Image 1 (cartoon, helix red, strand yellow):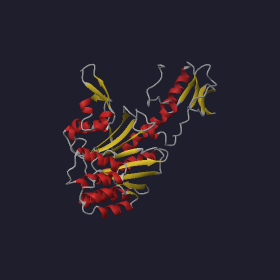
Image 2 (cartoon, one colour):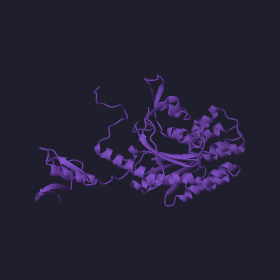
Image 3 (cartoon, one colour):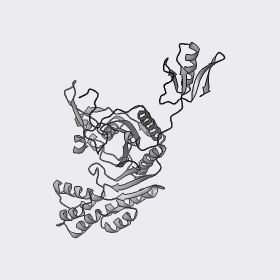
Image 4 (cartoon, rainbow, N blue to C red):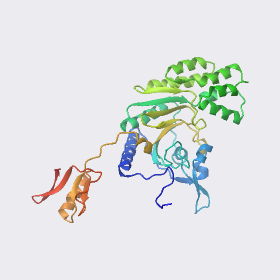
Length: 382
């Protein structure tokens, strides 16, 4: 095997794409700052027991593991940043009130999460800690959509669901872990016949409710039907009402609902959302409420957030225009070096042409040239 061949689903990022990704990173961080979010940068690796605290088996399987040569303990390379941010909120900041945090950095996956996906996403995320009301959920949604709009994506679709619905419907039932897992799998793929088999010995209200859940996806009329179907379950009705409030707040955005969407059911604790855009094979942004995330660190408090992969985003957003550059000759002339330094200090990109390479072109597509006129170096249009 050639020494330069990379592992499957790992790739170099070349100049044009790397520049675009970096511009998106800065755009997202600037957008989050305007909403009042503070940047944190957790480490790429931690002791495994800390990194995987409370995250469940799914993240464990996605985590690369190695032995620390200093301590002899097992380390993990993070597969998701949210648990680390929860640790920061709980132990390092430990603030009493609302805390808004954002982050952007690579995560590593042992397996791609879908065909053709990278195993090294560049994850951006934002989270609010300390507020249990719907206002925090709506702010996170607004920030998630605001970032996409700033990146040039204006036609998006938001799919809403709520992780409280199924647990509320199952209250009072004695189900084994295997029975719950089988039911989750059937509901996740909306396998109505399988759900009927799994619930055949249940009482009629619960049996009918679970059967109906497989059909409750689509536009806002789904909520009307769900309120009637689940009228006997106040917790479900409350969740549906919050979904309606969230949809009403998303003016000018196409909103759909899927009340049986169980992705991340062991992680989320309330309203969940996924944002879809044309050109992406799956949801580009996922987020929601996860109030249990800090419990394992000894500080359970309300939390809601979202994340996305900037490497995936760059494939569907329009390329940002490259700021035109200035071409300059290379020389040791002090006056020329001062002129170049002055231009760069004002934010201009100045590309010096090395001797013998005058005919070459590069990505910067210079539209001006620094030339020597009447004893001075001046910028002229090409």
